[in-house]
Length: 402
Image (cartoon, rainbow, N blue to C red; front, side, top):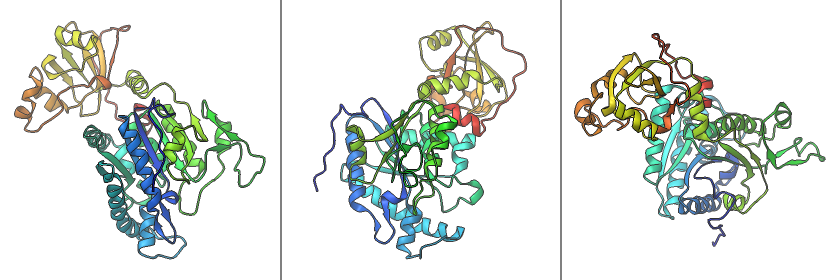
């Protein structure tokens, strides 16, 4: 089948990293199983974006629904262990389907299964981000789903709208596309109110916008418009734009690219600005990294902090904590998210990045603090307080990190 896709000048052209979230009802038919033709069309769309140089991540629902079809489970509510069994069968089939669909375009799929804790506990969050970043750098397509085979009620998202938003913020995506069985936000649930009006743009999510959400869920989907608005709050606060569009037809992303009907949610700034604003606003820090004059000049020119420029380390911190960077006079030059635990940072301080593996016994990051995780303090160069309060990333801070 020949499908039409758009060129490089479409509506999605400005976005360089896009997360596409796909609802269960789009991928899986309750009686027939996987919608292979639809999956092939979305793979066409992903290939179109990748051909432009856009990095694409997929958050794919459907494992439980597909497993339920494979195992021929009757309709109705499933017990937790039944859902997990369906997910176990469905996930392997879903991963194979994605791999084969993308392989037709010479694209490699990388499966990532996440739980709530993977995006909210600092170390697991950093590990997940590093793995997904590596896949993107290797030009693979991360296909992400909630790990329903192990997640219990109290540690799960329960819907992939909010998981999509978390992934988008974690990866500093420019845009989150929520493909669903509804084409956007209405002033009231359209299936209940014939006078409901379509909302094409949401500059800011207000209580009035939240009140419009209703409950536009489908039989196969755990999410409704309420969860999409919740996802929008997470994404837009972190600088990621969001759009809700219908995925019912073939090539839904290409249709959106050509200007198809959808509701667009404006971001608050951009992902990098939002993350750096979060770093700058943290009052509690976990340690101090003293650097030489050469490192200060490098930082001021927009470069990362390398171990070679570090002269002394104070405090007790772990990878992912916020630390202050001080110049030779003890004045604050910057602060940022450190890439090493204090013990390892101390061992490689003053050394060239090429010696990290030799010293630590593993291939760590070449930067002590990457420039994307570092905020300069041109206008408030002050002495650092002697006592540094350790701050851990909690749920709210992770929503704002990116």
